[in-house]
Structure formats: C-alpha cells, structure tokens
Image (cartoon, rainbow, N blue to C red; front, side):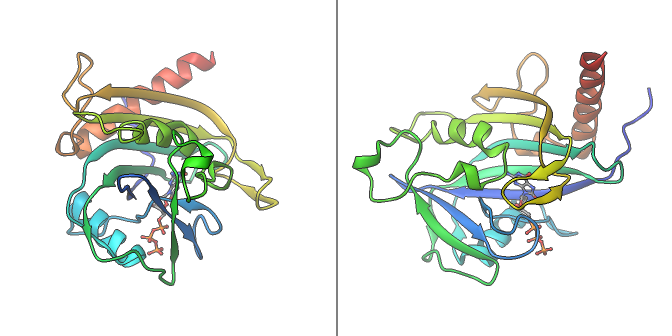
Length: 227
Ligand SMILES: Nc1nc2c([nH]c(=O)n2[C@H]2C[C@H](O)[C@@H](COP(=O)(O)OP(=O)(O)OP(=O)(O)O)O2)c(=O)[nH]1
C-alpha cells in the first residue's frame, strides 16, 4: 500500500482555563490574523511537542504552563491546493501557570465565558466562535465541557480530521484555502487509553509512524465515502 506522502507540519495549541473562564488570543499578525484561537505555533527542530507548546504559550501570552493536559490532535488539510501541507495540531489545555497573561506583538489574550455559562452569570463575553477557525466550534465546546460547569475526572481526547475545499471567506472577503469544511471525521475518547481500534490517546503514543498511518486510513475512508 502506498504511503500518503503530503508534507505534514507540526503545530501546538494550548487553551488555558481557570475555574470560570477560558483564555483565547486575538491573533494580531500572520497566519490566522484577526481570529481568536488558543496559543501555539510550529514545533521547532530538536524540541518535543510539549516543549514547543510551552514555549509558544510563553512567547504569545507571557505565561509559563505548569501543567499540560493533552486533548488530542487536529489534522487539517486543504483540497484547494494540492501542495498545501497537512497541518497536525496537538491540542492541550493548561489549568496552572506562572505569571499573568499579557499582550504581545503577536497575540492579545482575552478571557471568555465557557459555553455552559449563562450570559448573566459571567462578566466575561461569550466565546466568539464566529471569529475563530471554523472547526473550533466542533472540538472546543467538547473539551471545555470537561471543565465547565464542573470539572470531571479523567480526560477527554479526540482526533479530528477535516478537509477544507477553499472558497471566499466572508469574514475577510478573501479567497482562503483553509475555509469551507468539505469532509470531516471526529473520534472522541473519554479516558486517554487506547480503544479497540488502537486510538492513540496519549501524546507519546502519537508517534510519527502512527500519525502517518492514521492519516492514510482517514484518506482512504474519505475516498471511499466519495464514491
Ligand atoms: N483551531 C485551528 N488552529 C489552527 C488552524 N490553522 C492553524 O495554523 N492553527 C493554529 C496552529 C497554531 O497554534 C497557530 C498558527 O501558528 P503560527 O503560524 O502563528 O506559528 P508560529 O508562531 O510558529 O509562526 P511564526 O510566527 O513563527 O511564523 O494556529 C486551524 O485551522 N484551526
């Protein structure tokens, strides 16, 4: 069987939460400018995914994560450009950190009320899903449901594979290859252990090889569904 060979780019994303609120960053420049998102960026050569996640959070919001619950992986690809890499984004929360969130050149941190909060009971605004990457509204509420309204035991993990067909992005008025969800696959697991299908719940189990196999499996399933 031929391996799926599109280049893959490794990213991290941390969503800090306190007992009542969710911290997102308003991206001031570069890729995703004008959108709210968690904090993260490319994993650099020589660092682990977790090290990259902690470094990016500190660079973008000036806080140093003291814990890093792992929640899973987003595989994002665009069929609008055959040369576009697959983005592999490893998603974490952080519930403890050192320092206070501060605005940086890249990001403006803003506290939001989790989706489970009624408007009147919070001083913070609701999460602006309409102003975020469009797949965020699928996985973020479920990750947050693990913390709000009351924290649950264990952990929740997902693999979310989305292809975008590209199109005019109404928010920016520009053609955008990372816009217009075409196909999607979401796998959820509560606990972090492997399930019968071998879903690699923990970060250390998502090795390079496993990620490649996972993508290949999903691509084949997507193709089958199309026919
Ligand atoms: N939820 C979501 N996050 C995304 C998508 N695309 C995408 O890059 N991200 C995340 C991954 C990273 O956390 C962040 C992009 O990181 P970045 O381009 O700022 O990376 P960086 O800081 O290393 O970049 P640079 O300024 O050094 O060039 O946005 C998407 O479609 N959905």
